[in-house]
Image (cartoon, rainbow, N blue to C red; front, side):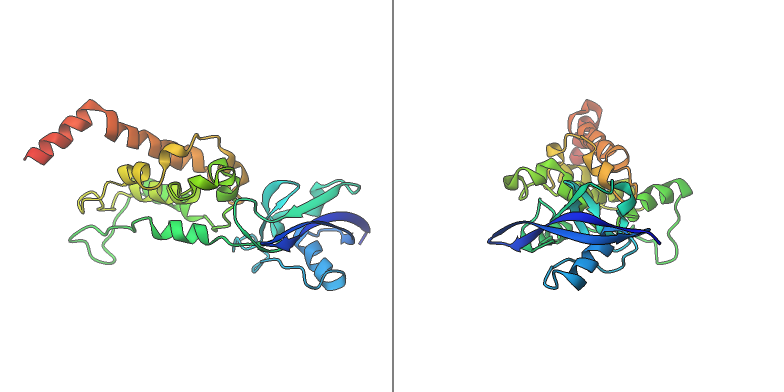
Length: 255
């Protein structure tokens, strides 16, 4: 096994402030950035705070920014960098720092609670749900989300405009709304819930300008923009501005 010495710059600090700290650390073949962070904790910075759990790219815990790009520490191989390259590791920029590489992502859980859950169809009991495989596959893509919140971090609506957070759910939770809106068994409409309208009015769908940055950083390869956000926008616009839809709503309300 060959090894070499790499130069790292790791952000150290807390809510009061901080800065980058330089480290020279050993790197071995096959290692990922999380391995190097663990080696720093073991050899040079025992008080370095980092959040992690599975080390298999499935828990979403070790989200950070590597050379300015939101990534999972456990899924970023050291082999993608040049040996003489300085590697910068910083916390997620869109969320408040707790300490070092650990951020407070409570914003995301607050937004998750604001999305109305699946509404079961009336008269269909457990085990009686039937769906076309095509519909199953569509939902299954969105269900691959590991809630690493990299899409939330890279979305400039959240990242660059703190004032937008109150009105904007972000791509992860607009994707959840889209999944439910596409679900053939979701009886939200019968229960008086218009998911397209709530996406627009309550979750800030109009703030999204489909730059696809969320799709680019998704470690699960979910096509968030193409398969969730754009279709959701199209349906929301149809419901709001299509004259035939408007007339149908009027007739239903009158009857």
